[in-house]
Length: 506
Ligand SMILES: [Cu+2]
Image (cartoon, rainbow, N blue to C red; front, side, top):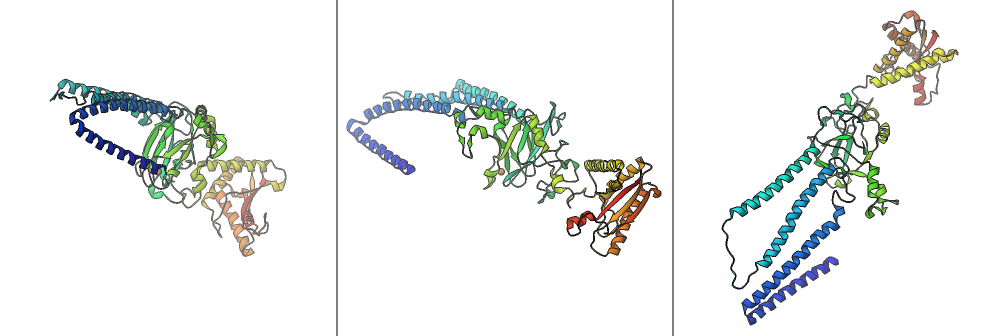
């Protein structure tokens, strides 16, 4: 409706202007062309001066009025180290272009007024003026040089990469340490990756991308094992961050407006930027608190005001498709203690999703940390059994000794626990053991007896192959005669299929 009214007004105005023109023409015919023309020129010159004043007042006034909507002003302060210099160079540019803008506008309208056509005055014609040419070439050249050099300086600061002396770590403490994270754009979200305890992001290969491996991480690269995929970016304040940026499908753009960094995410061509967040989310919220536009209730959370719910954000600044808007991710800048606490809650993608699956190239071996953990677990159980006085407390069940289905062949991972036992037997030279095999109650009992005996024997053979004297070991198979759990459930049957040892002497 408003648009319709405005259109109607414009049409009417045009009609009026055309009618006035016609009337003036008629008047000119009556009064004589030249007189009318001259008074008209005079009037229009005056109008132009008026327009100039109005226009300049409006331009400058609106710039001042809307100042707080510009980057670097009011609530839009930069939150990174280089962001302030970037805002500064914008202001310098604005200063010079502002001066040029005002001068040229004044001259433009003043000349139109001053050199309006007057009876008997003729325009002079200048072919060429060297001095003028020099002036209007040199002045802009000097100003441009100043702006470009200043801009390049800031650009280099923004685009500077980490140096060779810098070390990537998960928890940057020293001056030359930085945190490297990774953002991969796809339609329509960002997949984020942190390096894990080793501080290094593992290698990727696009051919490895699958449903369970969204980034195509190469699992044979151990640097990948501790990498984790958080749902938001959390950064420690005041520490250098290098962001590695890639894309999986089309062009995206990794944009952190509050930190004044922005970089295209290009499929097949990793890009990067380095920045240092200088203000925590909480500090930034406090600085927003004084602005009335942030003192209103948050529509999503009416209990709180906008400044309280403010969060830094990551956006995609490339129009990458229909769901482009949904590529927002929250960025939190926190103190080092909070950052460390957040890290505690993060779990390695490999350990939580890939470990032990068919995609795991290490499924037949234990990782160092697992070896350590299990050894500790074993030694704790052994110490407990050694110090026990009751006979039935001297039996320890192997938790990780397993056999291939229906056979007495040890699975590859079984050797670790058996090696722990070898070590213990070497340590306690007088220790003698009885090994026992058990099955569940499925199948033929005769077969179960044979299998359990064979399995206990396999364990014995493994131990003797590692140099333990045969005289220290006896073995027996119990079949399904000694269940520790019900045989009615799969879980119970699993518990009953076990191998254990009892300390006879120590
Ligand atoms: Cu995008």
